[in-house]
Amino acid sequence: MYINDKVIVKMQDTLKIAADGTRLKILFSLLDEIDNNVLEPHHFVEKCVNDIACQIGASQSLVSHQLKVLKDGGFVKSNKVGTKIYYSLKDEHVQQIMKITYEHVLEDDNHD
Amino acid sequence: MYINDKVIVKMQDTLKIAADGTRLKILFSLLDEIDNNVLEPHHFVEKCVNDIACQIGASQSLVSHQLKVLKDGGFVKSNKVGTKIYYSLKDEHVQQIMKITYEHVLEDDNHD
DNA sequence: TTATTATATGAACAGTTATTCATATTTGCA
DNA sequence: TGCAAATATGAATAACTGTTCATATAATAA
Image (cartoon, rainbow over all chains, first blue to last red; front, side, top):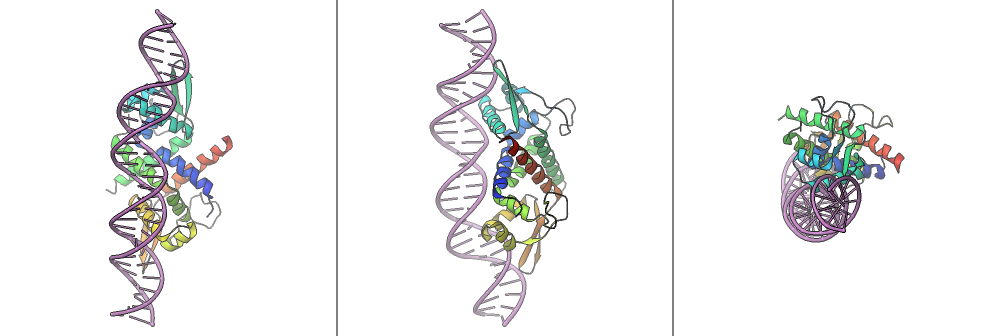
């Protein structure tokens, strides 16, 4: 084995964070909405907790909980302005994981 | 939201499969071993269940269970020869997910 | 047939986790 | 000060899942 256990655990933890419907919806909502193709490179949008909650149809509490998971996992960053806290994608790795996973499930559709 | 719930569920399911240490070790063991850089493109190696179990230090039963998960999820394919069943990576999406996740955790190391 | 090798399977348990609900904290404003 | 808005937090629960153990199945050889 080339990859040591520490790296395996980190990869596992990273993928676990992405492997949740609510968190995926949050991440998609943080992708730029200017052009319809959300999976192409771009700069990232900032949104506050309530706006995300409304957009994905989840409660404030749930979104707050999951944003904490995403932030601890290095998926998003935050920016406090007044009482609002704006969240945005942290880097492009997240976007790339989503893009490849998206392509993977689309390809599977052809085999069903 | 651009992405419908069906796609979200499929992405979640796909990522869940990758988000496990044992399964990640199995996938890494199925990457070609000729050049040391396991994360570059290549053609995929075939290995039987017992060989994988020995290489990653897991029981036969556990590896068999997880290979079933990986196969059902479209991550690996199998090829029966006599009593042995040879498994290999199914396509390059799996490899790409691993590569990007790997890069992501390496980058995080710089911030610790 | 019997024995052996390789793999799959099912049940059971322990540990984890997503969600909800209620409440706390923080900030801005009157 | 008090109030409202935005977000975070903690507990509790229900559902899920990775692992182990024992056993079953399949293929080969003697």
